[in-house]
Length: 118
Length: 108
Image (cartoon, rainbow over all chains, first blue to last red; front, side):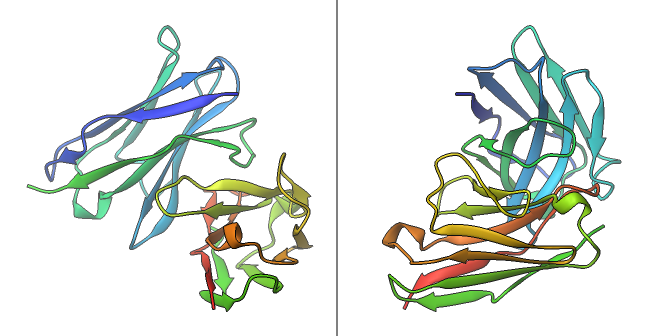
């Protein structure tokens, strides 16, 4: 059974970069597709993007100019960077696994709250 | 992008009653790439239904999904106490993948 665990700062200042890491256990990120999804009271659940086992990425156009998802296979981790954050980026951030590029999410991390505030 | 509209926003029912939740898409959802999730406070969403009508592993058969194209339904045949939660639909056939705003099933 794969397990995903998000980690990173819970507080980020406006205009700075939000950085999160998802550590995967019980499975290898050299297979499948690895995503970030966020949930805020104002916008509900929002898909941010994914990185595939081969390193290809797909981002939500609404965030594409500010998002980078990368993988570190040596650590079995993947990461999210979101630049130039504002209060609107305050949300619970989840990492999740899909079996293909066109797939639902059967495995999720527990989520981590990131607040953007000075 | 495909917008998913869920209705009603809140459903107030008693244990043992039947719940019918709707998810309507602004465009046809490719290959019925429509999933349903259950979320309880402080928890991540949990996959219930994929492919519009297939139950995920371990999901009780009181949960069923139906529909195609732009209209989808999640039915809970007899509500158990643990079923009171928020339910989301998601389409993953047209990028960007999108979620509905959720239906809260609360105890009446």
